[in-house]
Length: 107
View 1 (spheres, one colour):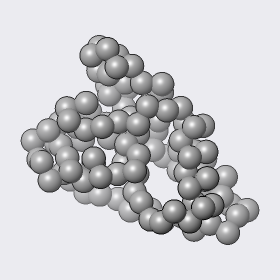
View 2 (cartoon, one colour):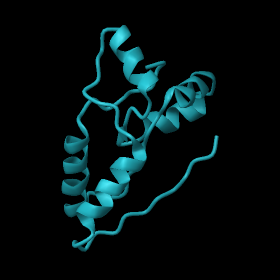
View 3 (cartoon, one colour):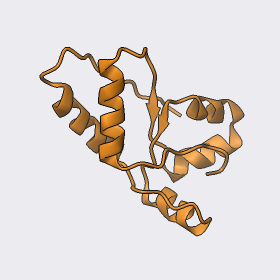
View 4 (tube, one colour):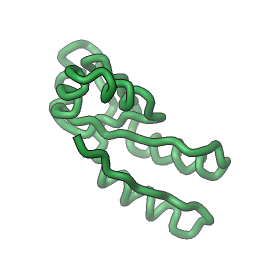
């Protein structure tokens, strides 16, 4: 979408992918949650677009992203709210020896 690749998966599939990867100690990576505003900024800023495209996962966090994907013939399985996913992830790893860190990117 506007040159940013989006992960097409359900929230449960994403959660399983993350937890499985964390359990295997595959190394550090980051996840982004682009909404329409972020995609517009990335369309005008190649460096920002590269950062988004460098993420292990780019989760569609905005109904506008989901609707646009459908309009261009590439429907997404789900809108995945970053906050909801993080809450689910924290619950999932709370009884495991896994550390999860968070960072906020300011645009």
